[in-house]
Image (cartoon, rainbow, N blue to C red; front, side):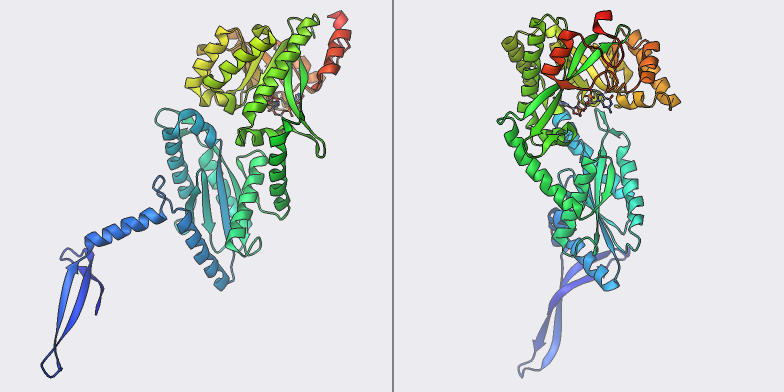
Length: 492
Ligand SMILES: Nc1nc2c(ncn2[C@@H]2O[C@H](COP(=O)(O)O[C@H]3[C@@H](O)[C@H](n4cnc5c(=O)[nH]c(N)nc54)O[C@@H]3COP(=O)(O)O)[C@@H](O)[C@H]2O)c(=O)[nH]1
């Protein structure tokens, strides 16, 4: 007979031992004695515990790993079934984690995951289970859920915790979570289906702007299928010439003259019709297809600009959006050199729009890239300015030609005193640093009037002109047709 026992030291510490009891019999086979042998198994126990920990816990974050999560979910579902209660599964994905990992390196990525894991764990009760599902994905099991809306409070707590600035050893970064929520038994009875549905809800949260949560609904299955179809079709779109560039004019506000255009990509699918960029650009980024498609946009835009210049529309400027995946010195700069060489476009008429968040999350790369662009006389504008918490000292240190005030500020300048003050402050700050300001999203005469009074140099928006295909714009530029500002080119 043998087994594990728990012994107690004088100081009351409890420790495990292995007890073996052997029976001693006399010559006639009668039982006379027992011999108990006790051996220490603390070390063996420690190895077992370590092995258990290695197979069930994530070494980076210390949270239960996917295997333990699956076991716990199975047990929790059994309990829930017995209690006739409900269970919620939260599927959390970190927004923009890949950006930090790609730009700041894997050590920073690891640090970020550790801190994110701690935030998720601290946002839930001791009795709830938070696990690392894999990569930048976390899961939380909430048991005894009778009112599904209560789950919302937990999701909001997680969003709040993960939206605070995260201080890594050498950088401060901002991330946010997208959370999907599915319930047992109402959304799924099988474990795999429950996880899949929470994941689908998370994906919907991501598509609807990130930093938010979504409850699963059956319609999301169709969305997942649609995404897969979209992804397959996107892979073929470039070869099938389904992308086009439209151009939105940018005007000099005092004179109303068109001084530049912003190239905006469009995908015309033969069956789906026009697919908006907000739906396919994130997919291009996830699949890295943004590299060939981004290169196509730069090349097509530069060819068109050269053509406009040839028609006498010099020095019309072209702005092209650059995505985070393209934002690498060893990719972007050689690509620009090739395209400028091929098209013979004047680089001083080419402007790259870099979003404020890409710029600050990649500060080291930013310095090198901006200097390389500057050396080639390529212009740099900071897109969506005002939304990215950037430290203003960067503006002084970097060769920036223009700030583009995000359209969210412009849209509210007449209803929100703070948006009006921020807009004025951005303009005066930029002017004090010798940087030009371009306002986006001018949608009515009031916006235009305010920006002119505030001495904003340039602007674009639906009130002035929407983005249009190159032939229509060429026609317009050459025939000098009036725009919505009422100023005829001939009067400018
Ligand atoms: N990396 C790349 N990103 C690109 C490229 N082409 C577009 N994009 C990005 O996609 C986002 C959505 O673009 P789109 O639907 O084209 O919207 C642009 C304008 O149409 C819109 N806009 C312009 N004026 C107004 C307005 O008055 N009101 C209003 N509600 N919207 C307006 O704004 C979008 C331009 O935004 P921005 O780039 O910030 O100047 C968008 O993020 C594009 O950047 C590409 O080739 N590569």
